[in-house]
Amino acid sequence: MIRASELHLHRVYDALQQKLRAQPLVHGDETWVQVLKEEGRDAQAKSFMWAYRSGQDCAQPVVLFDYQPGRAQEYPQAFLAGYRGLLMSDGYDAWRTLTGTIHLGCMAHARRKFTDALKARKTPGGPPLQALKFFEALYEVERVARQTLPDGETRAAYSLRLRQQHSLPVLAAFKTWLDDQAPKVLPESLTGKAIAYARNQWDYLTRYTSDVSPRSTTMFWSATSGVLHRKKKLAVQRHRCRRQGKRRDLQFGADMPGMRRRSLCMATSRAH
Image 1 (cartoon, one colour):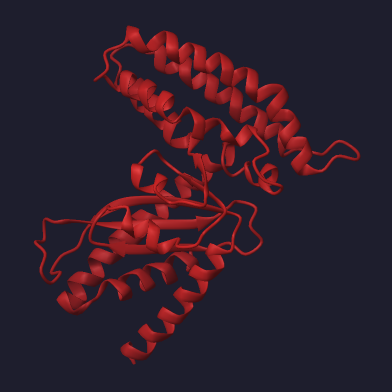
Image 2 (image 1 turned 60 degrees about the vertical axis):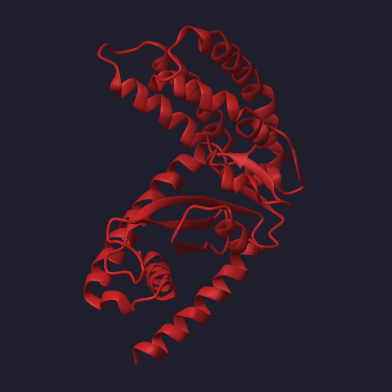
């Protein structure tokens, strides 16, 4: 019974993976997991759960997890082999090695670094709060873009127009602020690291304001304000899968292969 269920989940997983590869936009992220009683590995060894999902406006949403023993670039390369759409991720180098895709930077990751820097301050405010005001202005443009459309204008055209009229000036001011602040903060401080990350990822973070493909203007909603919700939801799903993975390993022991783990996590994430 277990073997038959595993084979069935394997077929479902492969079908969903093909469906995901056909999507115009894919979100990718990875997180470490500790798997107990895994053959050939210490219990303290770090493994990784790679998470993939379709865009916010996808008619057939897909969420998949891919358990792997490491964080090397070969894992997303294999999982998304042949993918030619838009790929949203953080700044981890492994994602950028995928060729044939249009890479987008995750605004939520950049924003979170300033949020962490603000929480760590002994006194409120300062540069992290100033940075967060830029993010709020960018997110407000996206909230407006999701409201009632003007007569005779498509959602894609409306979103692109708002971004170019309102987001680009905010981004220009933000970039000037980042460049001005960079030499004034300690590079190893949380604020310094947040500023460095935003500057290093700038081209990817701002690419959503350009019409990089005929389909892009609709999907870049997921790449900006919508991604904050998506990343939070994705983190919850990863954490749930991580906890379930630990429990099942403890229950099944060393005979539970990675394929079964990722299929079980896929099936559970789809059910919630």
